[in-house]
Length: 103
Image 1: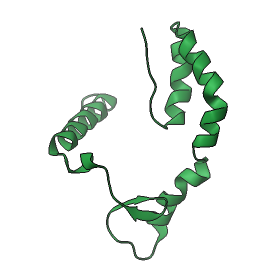
Image 2: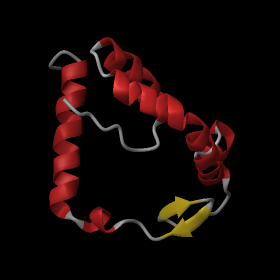
Image 3: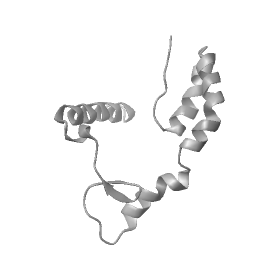
Image 4: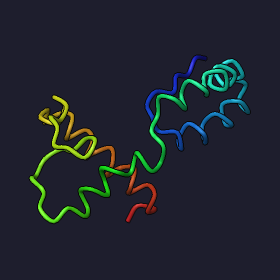
């Protein structure tokens, strides 16, 4: 079985890799470890990653929209896709309901 971990969510990956290793996915774990120095150079630090959120939360006046690197930026095309937004809503609602025990 091949499993690919995509995205920049290091917290998720750090939790997933030990589980994969325990399930016999040593090759993926080894590749992840070997590429860690490159990943560290490409990803933002926690402080850098939080800058845009802090900027948007504390700016006295801010134009409504999507922000990247503390500046208004165009959002991805998927933000205008009603099917994608409906699926995101439905799956998030299902996940949250499961966490709350069906409430």
